[in-house]
Length: 464
Image (cartoon, rainbow, N blue to C red; front, side, top):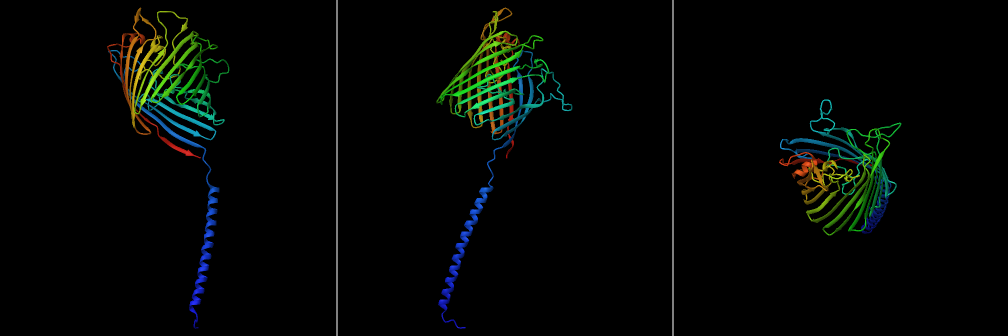
């Protein structure tokens, strides 16, 4: 066959091919668009919802070695230094849901070598023991009624203000926790308030409410109200009112619970690099012997912070009694369940009131100098000690000046979960301090040093 008009045929074929190709491209494009649209809708439909539940498991482990020659107890010329290493291990479980928090902390504390590794028995007497069985340090549930209200029920730490009256006491090997119920309000803006209720007992008694712990001291009933109000960016006000009851110390008198009341608060003002505060509390009611209380505590402080340097100058004033006079009231202020370690010297010479001051009260002017930059935190803290009231020992009136203490501490954090701390502390004591504390020798040199390593890694975090 002879093609007479090849150009026309070629043109016709080209037009047919082009038309079909264009149609195919258009159809394919539309098909792809439709397919992608369906895929997007499928992704949207099958996308996982926001996970509201989480469980975090973490470790809090601290090992501390100490070289003691005057920690808590004043040395004499005949005393020899002591060296020891203790360890605290906590495993924490923190569960959070939309309207429910659950927290548990299992704790083991021990002195290296104090426990027989074969039988698990401690070789120390109860008053010396620092090895405790594995127990629940914290364990509570906290349902949230809404974004502002919740209630925390169970064993928990009570931490308020600067921890002077209520503290976790983390320096102590076992720490400090309470069995209580706490109603919490927090508007997340400028107002927070908490109400704590606790009542302690030995067991499931069928009759009576006799509660006199053996080997330790604990309250029978506790009520705490805490309020923190941020008035503006510069001014803050908080109040803390407490009622704690102890069963009468008289034998067989379990029906009487003497209530001690502590009321007061703190005002804080900050501007630029300056911070000013004044705290004051009064104590009234009765002590465990039934004697009326009439005591007070004040603490003014000024702080200056400039980049890496912080300077704090203040004084703590705890009332006491003139030992040469007879009072109808107990005039010794007791700082409840707070921590003394960070306020009155790291050597804890005045950690138990009123025993450590023999009821004479204490005045503690202090100057703290802190330097913090990157992974280094250096603290140089100095204290002067005076008895608040006149103290007479063996018919001799003692001077009010008791001595001074100087503490040097260094923290280094090589990683966010490792904290290495070392400290060296020493004191200069007077005859008056020896008389007040009923121990020690002014010719001896009280000092104490330690090295501590703390690990706080997160072992696992799960969301579901």
